[in-house]
Image: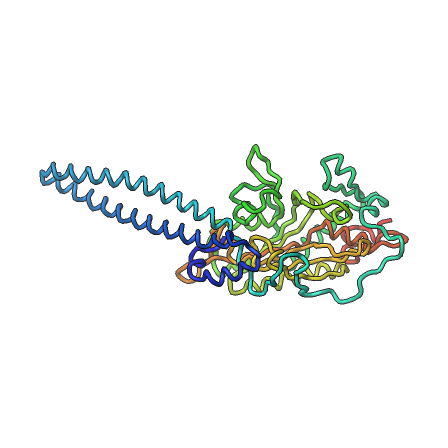
Amino acid sequence: MLEVQLIRSDKDRILERLKKRNLSADELKLLDEVLEADDRRRRLQTELDEMKAERNTLSGQIGELFRQGKREEAEQLKSRVGELKAKLSEGEDALRKVVDRREHLLLQIPNVPHESVPAGSAESDNELYRAWEGRLPGLPDGALPHWELGEKYGILDMELGTKLTGSGFPVFRGMGARLERALISFFLDEARKAGYEEIIPPLLVNEDTARATGQLPDKEGQMYQAERDNLYLIPTAEVPITNIYRNAILDASDFPVKLAGYTPCFRREAGSYGAEVRGLNRVHQFDKVEIVQLVHPDHSYEALEGMLTHVAGLLQQLELPYRILRLCGGDLGFTAALTFDFEVYSAAQQRWLEVSSVSNFETYQSNRMKLRFRDGKSTRLVHTLNGSALALARIVAALLENNQTPDGIVIPKAIRHLTGFDIIS
């Protein structure tokens, strides 16, 4: 969430940037409401401090008066101390309420877009940042989409997933399962080579963890909840991995903190029916390797560029045509200051599929997490970043479609040592 002192000192710039998100007038008024609540908090805190000081002074005087035998005067002061205690109790209760209100308001305000975020309200307004150079793959007549290829070769069974769980829960079989496992290993191995520490986190998180990275209160409708235990299935490994450092104070020498983890991810994906959501295009459970960085604020955009290079390298090794889009304000996630989406080309479907988002959150998440680092005698908020490296469902879809031949589906050379086979036939 945004820092109150930043809103107070730079409200006009924040308002101007937030307009890129196409917020309503009522949503923009939340900034003023936060400042009003904080002003009220300051006044209450001053009143409480003054009453506590008076109470402490009177308590000292009461003891002295009793020692001097001035019982009547002491009793009068005791009566005043009793009044102060009652007012302090009321004031502390009022302070708690106004602090809670300020927190509630702050949680409703999205992150401030970076200056480079383009204006726009929809995916069509996203800006092409970089693209794979070369021809898009062409397939012969009769090329099949991945869901038909999966059925043909017995490697992907969407109907069985529907039987076992419901729509959007794929089952990989045989060579399909081995391909999935190989890709996970490949992404983790490449992350380790790039200096990331591998993490195996829990797949369920509590409310505090989900709130710290911004899933609550923004995305509760998209998450699966174990209501009896008040836990949430993770929508991405970003949530537990970033929270490893919640309430931590780092040293500047710790930077950059680089973490990577593989997990299944669970999302109540909403969408229309038809080819755009068939097969692996939109599922409720999918595998993903996530990379996370905690960095010094002066170097976070340099780190972001490094993460883009890392993800691009994975796609190049898999020989998948890709493009990178800079998201416009209207398509930007609630917690992100700047996001780049990677899309790969699906030859059989003849369209681009999103396979990764790489984002800089600046201090938005770290302020919620109380994640700081020592900067001389003071502390400052850390910048947090994360990215998919990569999400497997649509990667598998593109690999199957783009590499189909009359003899079978050819496996990219980069992962053949992990699959143990060159072709699915």
